Image 1 (cartoon, rainbow, N blue to C red):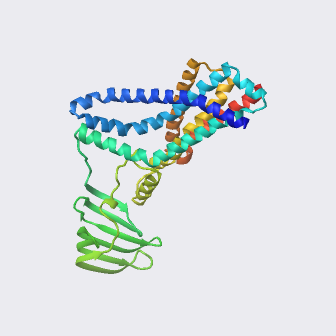
Image 2: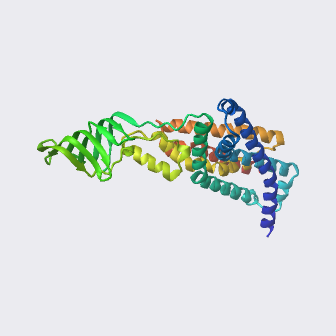
Image 3: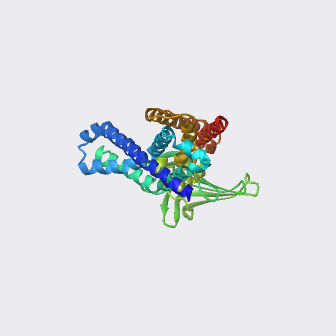
Length: 362
């Protein structure tokens, strides 16, 4: 019962500074963004509804990124006040270890991290996509531009097929100069080529082409047959034969993972996207990570309100710097998951070191 009452008291102490910090940070982000985009709003003669829709759907991602900063600032504020009033000394002398005293804060950080992860999977991708759509179509009036013609591409299709074409139009579904090589068990078994091809509901209609079949070795030509028209039940679609330029923030974890599989099937590099995939799991945990770092930091050194703000700014830049550094390392030097989790691992390690230092001091 004593722990329950204490936990409720500590949680109530945390709520007010957290919401005050969070509201202040989000307000600053919103005002800054309005001033940054003001010229675009005026030049585009954007309506109030368009501006409101853009800001309302842009802010969820910004607010989610600001969440760990507010958590860290609140925990430093609270523990600094508890230290100045000697309440922490009273807790520890009463036989309650700090790990149990502040378990409510660890639980709060974990809950906020899980909520952030859920938002990343549901609300954030849709809101981010809509905000960019509104900005380009109703504010900048650029419309939705999409490349529809692709020249001289070699891509991996399905069921062991490799496609080459001189030109592909995704809008009409027509292909000029298609060559489709089909491999089985690592050897070439057949090759279909044509002057043109069109995508139809049943597959692909090749016109004025040749079908070549190869022997068991894959190098010896077994037969060759010319045709005027032939329907091939290939499952690939025109859009499926070309890469789509997507923003990882507009996809959830499942969607981004599926997009990476498709990019790999097309033979395209996916390293950057793999880093972003693992970051979708690592970054939402920042609220829990800063709790693990902020509590021992506040216990080791007394924190005034001014010092709490300074610590928050320094640690926030430190964490964000590690995130970008980890992503850069993951492009060539370390695995994508290691680069994405570098910031969390470093901050948790630093937090553990501070806990050990406090134990030694006590």
